[in-house]
Image 1 (cartoon, rainbow, N blue to C red):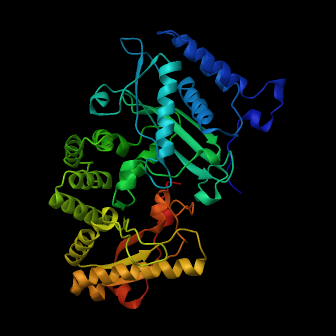
Image 2: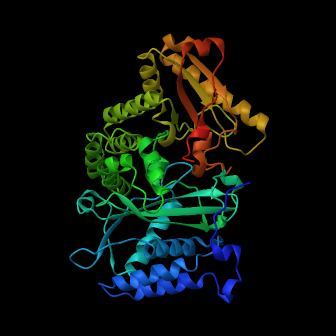
Length: 443
């Protein structure tokens, strides 16, 4: 039975003859009307909100984000404002819990949060998330979304089993290192898309990421908890990566490269987002050697951490790569780097093919294995010394990351080829463990 979280009105909706959303509506109205310096009204809003917690129902995405934003601010232990009478605040881009990436939905949520803060909460001064804003020790808002079986559920499920989407967020105080508010809401399934935001769609690789794990741990913290120290330590790099992302998506490639290489120089900057960014902007600037070197660093990073997934796109039902050179043109470079980086190590490599959940299980297993085997042959052709150190296997659709079965750009991660360093004895004996993908989520 899945865990459910509900307030008193969810269990006794008729208690006191009061509608369970009334307290939230009053609190939001008071906050929206508060003049600068109106901390008393903020405190009043908190008491009214706590008196009537809304039941776990799935709302439209806009309404869910509006209620979540209002509740976060109303319940925050804000303390005294700054000298101008406001609370400086930044939003560290929200993510999809399943992929660890920003999506079109999380971007829409951020836009909605910004609109609400600017129009309804004049005490909150919203600053762009970046290095200059972080230097002012603002409040920071982070959060995530994932598919769940039904409203009120918290346990993640694959997208194809989603009955609703859980949204949650926190406000952290960077000056004190504490979480000062945490809330959650549920949105209707039909309002959410799994499509990744542009830079994540374009990135050549995906892998579990320590920075993303720290972000998720922080987002799941409760009011009064300390902010995760690894998340705090990584914020300087995260801010540069956010600036680089905005510049890349706006076509300002030289500026984006400056931000991504700046992040690379920081202790916490050695992460997939950094090298995916350097790869993309170097390719856009026509710097082929720099792009290839960045892809090589991604392979090394994945091999060091036990897993890297490369977004090779195949023709439907085939082991042939997608014929469009814009898509598959760089693949020979990718294969060269994979072969060279593995050959330089005393390790063997498992190539594990995956497929989306459309089609029969037998067909998916057969196709995923055939694609992994085709890639194994290409790597061995590039580095013949690797022939005995490579093994292919097919997982079919048993380990989805997205799970929608859409078979388009939104679920490309479900048609990935996963590269995992393994002991050579296991390759020879054929005793390889599972992929461990069940551990990729922060539970």
